[in-house]
Image 1 (cartoon, helix red, strand yellow):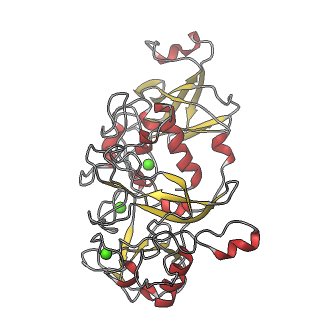
Image 2 (cartoon, rainbow, N blue to C red):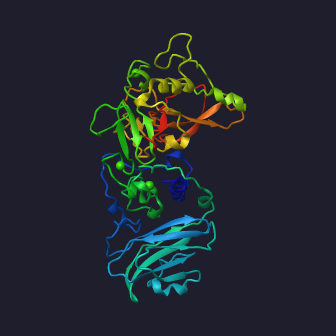
Image 3 (cartoon, rainbow, N blue to C red):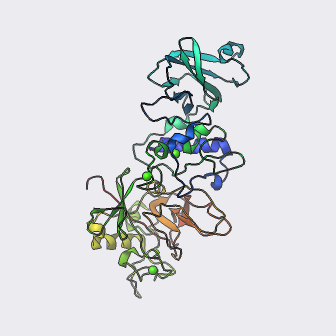
Length: 417
Ligand SMILES: [Ca+2]
Ligand SMILES: [Ca+2]
Ligand SMILES: [Ca+2]
């Protein structure tokens, strides 16, 4: 999944909710297996496995600048497909073939029986279009989809980036009343996060939740089976990034698993920034004894010193560990459902276990925040223990003063291993 698609996900959610608050991302319930093929019944997504046909047709629409792309599943015995779209709703028509009674309506007839997608262009950005796809056998209608809406936008076209990013893990849709329905109902469900992305196209709960695909790595850098109870690193099979696994987590800093104690915290510090005139951060915070190896007078518990120490120790046999970018760290966030409990973890705990006692829920990225003073960097919330927010902060990225003591999960590029 690239950044453009991530933005499409967010745009789809924004269309439904107004996108005004962080708690508008909902989704998946861990342990609730869901077949992607089950999500197409509500007039929403295309989920029919490749090569199979169905007696009913479902439409999916994806916006871009001045255009949208419609795609649909193959229908048994269909000889062609007809796409109808208009600036007004087509739902009042008793017979879709009477589309001409609606002034703005357009018919795109005789679409290939095998291509199963079509891009409509020369549209107006910011205008909402209504679309229906119909499967034909000769001149007879075999199946007609539910109507979807789509709004072309310049935002979707301006984004280009080849960096691979994971899907969100959100496999549930939202309605105006509910936020955990099984990707079947809800306003414009085909435009919701649950209807597309790796969580649909590469759904496999055996190697990480939904579309996530992880592998455990031992101290020697070797891949080990998922059933192994002890591991030191995690490889993301899709993004080809390798992540440090934080271990232990008993609420006491520096007493478990050497440099991987989940309780350890660090201030944000990068001395190389001095050369560019940006504040390098805080070498030693107000609680400098927040990590393994601390003794009075040393300055070990900052991000720069930590990266150097982990590389010197050759974690998982590698010496090229670094701080993650904000996009990379957000890429392993699991945007699952929000519950009324006071502790919500936003990460796949089969690979990144989060013990209840750990002191850390917020993690630094290596990305400085461009503020006037340069005194902040980006951080991501992977655990929300607040009884006030009840999990709604999970997955958000916000600037934080570099003097704060937060957790760190290091990363490295494993694409050439
Ligand atoms: Ca998705
Ligand atoms: Ca998976
Ligand atoms: Ca500890």
